[in-house]
Amino acid sequence: AQRVTQPEKLLSVFKGAPVELKCNYSYSGSPELFWYVQYSRQRLQLLLRHISRESIKGFTADLNKGETSFHLKKPFAQEEDSAMYYCALMDSSYKLIFGSGTRLLVRP
Amino acid sequence: GAVVSQHPSWVICKSGTSVKIECRSLDFQATTMFWYRQFPKQSLMLMATSNEGSKATYEQGVEKDKFLINHASLTLSTLTVTSAHPEDSSFYICSATGTELTGELFFGEGSRLTVL
Image (cartoon, rainbow over the protein chains, first blue to last red):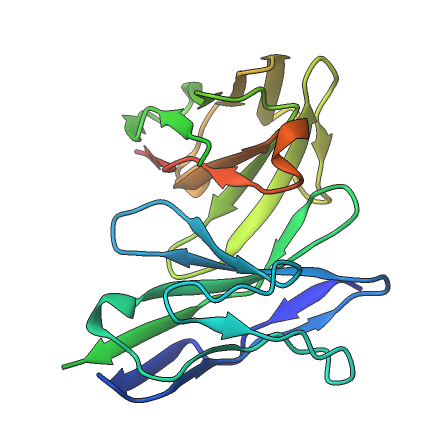
């Protein structure tokens, strides 16, 4: 079954600390994985996708097929990073399967 | 990036009435649109997929007679919650993609429905 798991509902760190938001997936084919972010009172927006291998706003995520993981990392968290983060898997028909989300709170 | 707009942003209605939510792609042709539902502090759950000009495909457990989806043009999809009840109160979000967007999805701002 296709599934995306984000084990942490809330991650609280101090400004400047490293951040890792965990994401594990279950998918029978070759997955296409994404991280979406939702800032307070704003719409969901794409943060990054694994095929582009970009670093957006200092965030990176590496697909580890052996561990079926796609953890989101940032070496130094900023207060403006506080938001809800969703890991998602896209199937062959463009359907997105979302994880339950992790709220990142970066404290000053 | 491409823009998807939903209307209304929020709506309150009486139990038993029907409510229509619109999802528009403003600057691209949305060949496929998706409708999601999000309960408080929970993730987005896909309700249905609609391709322009054809019937929507509903996910398991979603009542198609309850949640009517129409995608009559390349820029507009509508979700109608028929005979709404308090348990239908939720945040409804649409997303859209087009052939020129290489699979990237763009999300509307969401519509909050409260059924009294």
